[in-house]
Every structure is written in C-alpha cells, then in structure tokens.
Length: 328
Image (cartoon, rainbow, N blue to C red; front, side, top):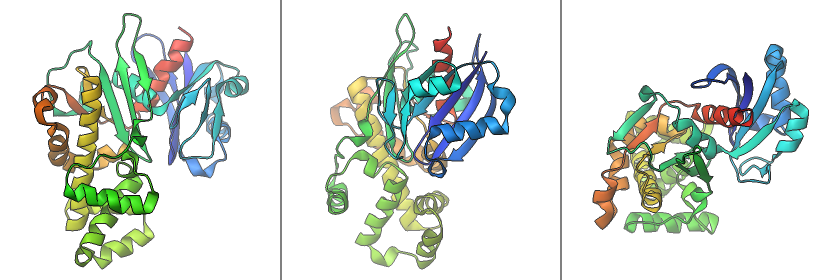
C-alpha cells in the first residue's frame, strides 16, 4: 500500500510517497520545496501530485510531521504562518491523515534506520528496550523521547528547544547577556539553530572585532550567514567561524546531556537534522566534551550511546510508519 508523508519545517517541506507493508517502508518518490514559497501545505501537496499524478491513485493514508505543537489534530507551525488540520487534509485527500510533531516523526524513524545510517560519537552500552532521546537543530531545535512498550513505541514530543538557556561559564554568561539585549528571553533555540549559529559568530565578533574578516562579512551579505559560518568554520578557513562552530557544538552537547539526564536514554541519544550533518567534522571533536561535562553524572552519561543520524529524511521515514499504523 502507498502512503503520503511530509516533513514540514520552517525552511523546507519534504513530501514523499512510500510503499508500506511488511518490513521497512520503501520510498517511491520525494521532493523538497521551500516552505515560504507557499501559503500552506495543501498547495504544495497539489503541486507534488501535479508532478506525479499516478502516485495519488490508491493512496491509503497520510502522515505529516510538523515543526510545531500538535493538539487535537491541529497545528499552528512555529516558524511558518501555517495552520494544519488533520480532518481538513483527510477530506481533501480522501484518506485518513495524522499530524505529528516533526521530532515525533524523527523518533519513530530512528527505530527503522539501518546500521550504516548512524555515525556513533560514543558507542556506549545500548539497550534495545531502553528509552531513546532525539534532538536536532535546524530552523529551530526539536526534541522528543521514545519509550518502547509491548504494544509498540510511545513517543513524547515536547518543545524542549524553547527551554531557558543555561550558561556554564563566564563566556556563556556573556553570551546570555548579549542575546538578552537582542531578545529579552533566551532559549536554547536562540543558539542551537541556523540563526543561532550566526548569532554565536556575531557574539564572538563583538568581543573581538579585530578577528572579523571583511571577506567573510561580504560573503555573509550575499548568502545565508549561518551557512557561511558553518562552511568556513568546518573547513578551518576563518578562525572566528571555527570558534563559533565549536561553541555551537559544545552547547549542542550540553543540551543533549541535559536531555539525557532527564530521560536516561539507554536506547541511545540521536542527533538529527541538516545542521548536524553539515557540522559533523567539528561535532566529532567538540560535541562530546559538552555532553559529558555533568560533574558527578559524567560516568553515567559516558555509558550512553550517542549517534548522528546520516539519513536526512529520517522524519519522512517516521511519518511513513505513522501512516502505516493508520491502516494496520
């Protein structure tokens, strides 16, 4: 049977059709669209099927993983002016539809990943029946936990990325003051997101203006600033960008460690999202020290598996599993 899936973020919306049944869902066709180019999800679905009309025939169900809280089958997206309604989409598609938080989709998706689709930053001692924690920086910061049960996985998706930033040293206290002047309140999402990476560069540049390179600033005026900082930082072509990336990775590790302390995910901690993939060469060095710096709890965290998801479409895979559950 075929199901339609979507992974809807503030920057991009991915739509795909999967074959589901026995075994791992198999992707048949997928396309990514700029989210801001459409007034809502339905115009993108119409465009998707206009490009491949044969895929709409025999559609059994649909599931959409959305960056935002889902309540009673509705979601107002956090970083888009969209309102999604499962009942309305179901009527339009003539098939059952479920909406889920985007990291609900990621949490389901990691349960179906092949071994080669994860790079372990820390192998640890994985318990297949243990709690799984997932988080990922992108347009925002998503977090969720998955609890295996005898009747299937239960996912608890929250908005942990909007929890208050907790500085750990004098540098980060100064960072908090810098961001408070901009925003009034500072969450982890203010630093662990695309805009957050650019903000870290701005912060370090304000402290050391002599380290700002005109060539970098010129490129940032033409391109996405976060992408420029990430590119130059990972390649080591601008020391200030590299420091911003390493600070990002350390903060990322610290928040992942916070989530791990609250959930004790013996099943593993998984980092998902495009930023982790782009910054992976620096994450290998700068993430785990932040994760493990938890005082008396460091030995406990040193036993947990910590991996980076290499499949950029893990959210779609999870949505396919959610759609398949509608017709099981």
